[in-house]
Image (cartoon, rainbow, N blue to C red; front, top):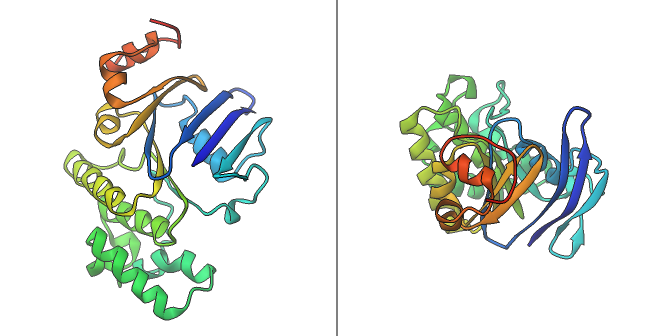
Length: 241
């Protein structure tokens, strides 16, 4: 289980305010809200990129608040992919395994498994700058999960894709999560994407979580004015309906 306990972080012009939630083992948890509301900052806080002003983060019973990012066993995928353009696809995917000094034979096995799962085996010997956006996103996703992280963080991972590629990627996400059961936190501004993927959804606005519920609860019975209006594509501040 991931526990985010009342974390606060002041970034100057923007603040994360009392972010508090739990994500169960194997759960697909979506943080949903407009652009600029703090979604990415929450992921980066979980990944260990900032020193928190207040609060703690736990994986199971281990307090990881002061653990360095590389020792948290967390995978993070950004919208912008952040692949190494000078490396082949196989080198990008296996980068984390090599850093962990995994045996060459085991790297080959892991590559075969993940590339078959994502249907990218035919891309292994290509440079990433010769790939389409959808192909690059699958490679970035493969690189994140091939190390078998305890927690997977996904930051607007399909927002730059065209509609057909986006739907295909979402289907793959759901299929792979069903197979691997990796505890996942996915941030998005796309309500339909959240409905399709999430076990539970947290609605966020202006650095504060307004409410948490199942997709059905959020859609049919929102408890805050902001959630109700966001479902309809509008905007307002957090507050009871």
